[in-house]
Length: 426
Image (tube, rainbow, N blue to C red; front, side, top):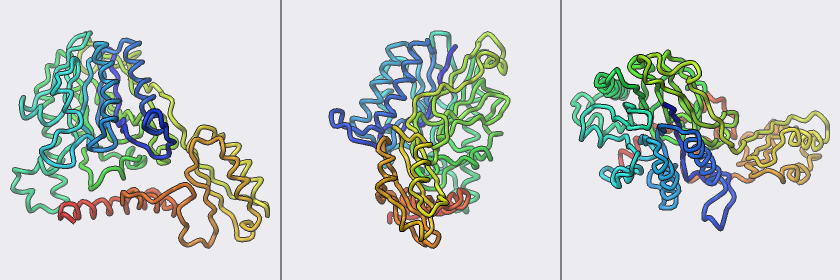
């Protein structure tokens, strides 16, 4: 049984893009669609039995009709090819208001063949049991944890109403762990089983590689410990939410597939693609995914993000800056250049000459001159203030060259403030 695992598609990201007038969207959205097409082509041409999508189909919680159409076109290809596909609800797939349909609900409403939707409505109708996908190679059990809606989880918990924030986080974590445990207890051990979650794990691997989703999420995100995943009950654990491809190092294969495209410079060095693995249903649990069938990352073509850092030594810094840009091979990439020079070198620096070296780039996010006594640098050329306060604050911290650990602590505090303001209706 061949299975594909991917996540964090984020159709609708337009940052650093060029308009494509004949299509009505930007080159960046086309990058994401091209990567999705590569995955669908692989699934159809290589005979995948199942696709597990671990959440966040769109960037916006209420995507445009165009974004929905382009996602549905590709899901339809999987459906018509007989590839059983599981769609998990992520935080970007949830509506902005209680009572509205989430972005993936239409596939259940239309009863699209071979498509399964993982959301809270399943638990309300069926109890805390996994779904069973009918694949061409037999049944596949899928336990799942959609993005946790804290208000829904603690609605009937009297302790939560007056609990301090630390205890509230603990209550939510306990409820999420219980939801996984109940589904694990309902599994048929004779059948292969996968757990898929859209969640942050409290793990050093992820804290050291924060990824873009850290500031795309408003408020403090719920987390789980690896020990709460009930790994012994499953053959594979498919995670979404963090954009980095990461092996969590459990005995049961447990991976964040990462996103199919880099969203910003925070993912500059990440490999992008989707996970592929083989399940042998004839083997006992714990031995079904191993050897030649072990999980591997299949790379997709991803738009490069390139940062060029230069600290010229010569009185005229221009030749050194131009050589650094040439060595970086910025053709077709999204590039930013940081030039660290003295006041004396600034008078000799020929900015237009350096700028011409970037003509082959897809998008120039900034060519920034950094002076040793520059207390408050302006936004780099080509960057505009963001209407999202968290994105604007993150951009400010990055341009101030804050260390990642300090930046993440400040952003976490800012997310809490935003969440409090939203709850108060401010």
